[in-house]
Length: 166
Image (cartoon, rainbow, N blue to C red; front, side, top):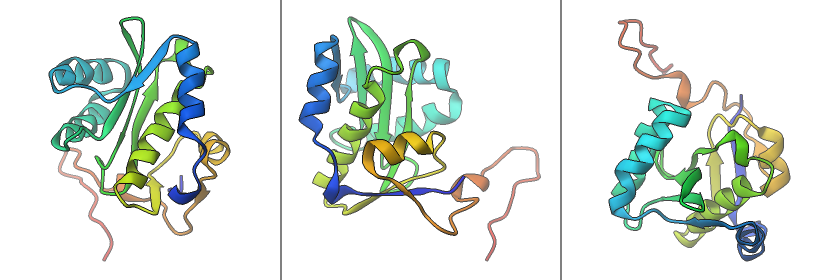
C-alpha cells in the first residue's frame, strides 16, 4: 500500500476532538516515563513485537513522541510519531472494543499537531492500513511511487533479507 502525505498546516481542530473523547470518559495524553514498560507490554500483547519495538523509540524523545488513550484505568489505544523514521506517523492502534468512538482520530490528531509544533509542514503515514480513515480524518493523500516503501526491507533472520534497490 502506498504511503500517505498529510498537510500539517491544514489539520482539523485538536481541541474539539479531545473534547468529544473526554465526554466519553477517555483521556488522551502523553505517557510518563515510568509507564514505558506497561505501555510496551500492552502494545506487544495487542499489536505485536514490531509495533512495540517502534513504540519504544518514542521514549527517546523528551517528551515522548507518543500518546495513549485511557478509559478508566485501562489502556485502549496508542499512537506514535518520529519512531519508524523522522517525520513519520505511526505505529498506532486502538483495541477492537474501543473503535468507532473517535479515539483513533484524537490519537492521530494529537500526534500530527505535535509534529506541526516541531516545525514539520507535512507528515508521512507509512504503509497505512485504513487509507479511507486517514483521507477522511486529515485529508491524507497517497504518495505516488512509494510502494513498496520502507517496510519491505527488514531483517527476517532467515538469511534471505531483502536488499533495497540502488
